[in-house]
Image (cartoon, helix red, strand yellow):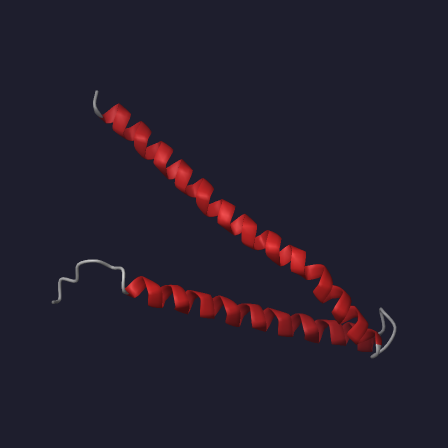
Length: 98
């Protein structure tokens, strides 16, 4: 009989944790989406000097800029993970090796 309240407590805790985690991710996605139109218009203006929209030069320019943006995002994510890893190493608690 005691297992039922414990089980309910665990399920509620896990549900709440997942809600908080997804909320943080939604906030990050919203910030990225808000920044996207400015990048797109800047890229459009930059690539229009290569040729009119739809031309091979314009399309190539947009693809190159998209690839650069993707690479920058990958590097930023790696930096974020490294930073989190560095901060997390000091908070691990008891180390059995010492």
